[in-house]
Image (cartoon, rainbow, N blue to C red; front, side, top):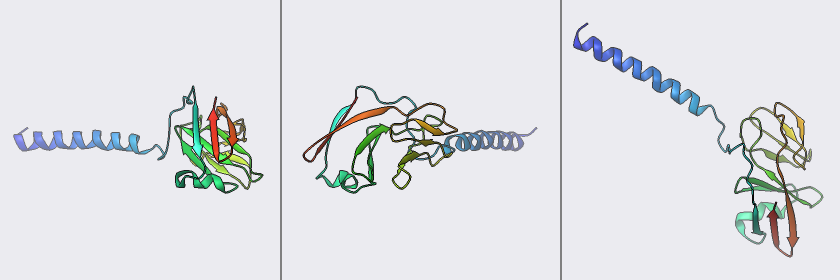
Length: 140
């Protein structure tokens, strides 16, 4: 084997490794988090802030520190760990069905975080919410 063939073989081998690594790394859905739910949570959201404006509308939701906080159609605030327990993709709140859905593989969770449909088999951790004026405290 001459030098040119040797370098071509190294280049092809390296390319194959890089493609494999990219395919593995690119398979995760954006917005994914950790499957370990946040602990010792205690933060307050200012509902007058533009950052939290989605919570002024029934059915709106936001992500904060690994938690999804939503306002139900009836106007109640709820909070659960944002990462689906199946593969860590952030769940979304579906106000019309009053549940959390994982957009990656379709797992469904109740507003308290209980699994309604797989492939997830573990519940989302639920957090307590407390509204005082225009401040929403999330803790647990």
